[in-house]
Length: 293
Figure 1: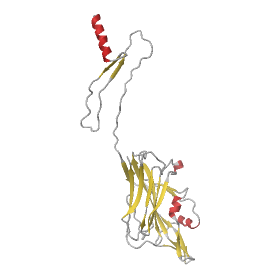
Figure 2 (figure 1 turned 180 degrees about the horizontal axis):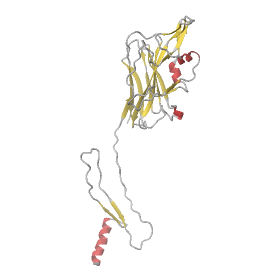
Figure 3 (figure 1 turned 90 degrees about the horizontal axis):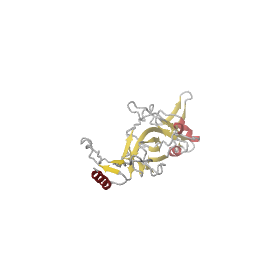
Figure 4 (figure 1 turned 60 degrees about the vertical axis):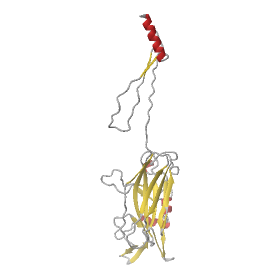
């Protein structure tokens, strides 16, 4: 019996040290109906000391987890079209964009790109709560620091061309260019830490009005007001197209992913300053997210 006990001790010494026992078994396989699933063999660590041992005794195991994550870029555009009918502006979000100057005999037009770029100007939401779309919400627009000619933006317009006739006075009280606004939300997702956004136009019909677009990120939303990075660009004016571009570094997210789905609050402005021509005019606004992996 003593001989057998000694042989057992020698066998344990050959299998491990410091009283450790390692052995493996084959676990049941993953369900063959489930793809992307695999497991490795199990392991057990048993530490032993004799019955007179006093002190700390630990058993330690390590699990290695491997996750395969695909490279992803994705976008969600809440609104895929915008139609403005200048024959009936009662349901449109249109305002005065300046006024006629009797001295020069021309219309003075406000610089909406500069106003949208101004500190304190912000916008959010898509101006409507669409039934069945929980991601749409009205939000608001705040155009900061309006002075002089810019204060005309406070007056709604319901007719084209821009003119107001006062029947009581029997005279015209205002005439000039008009501007129509539209808001939408573009959500983006990428797990790249090096990404960029491009917004451009294509397929523009000659005679299309001036188009200005602003893209604003939520930031930390103090008091519900977006304070993230803001980018504004004239995408089309008098036959000349433009593009809006920014990187994640410029967006304040250098070296970071979008952090899940990240909203872009979009404000579009169509300026009817007389350069537009009659007919149905169309333009495609293209939102592009590129991630480098």
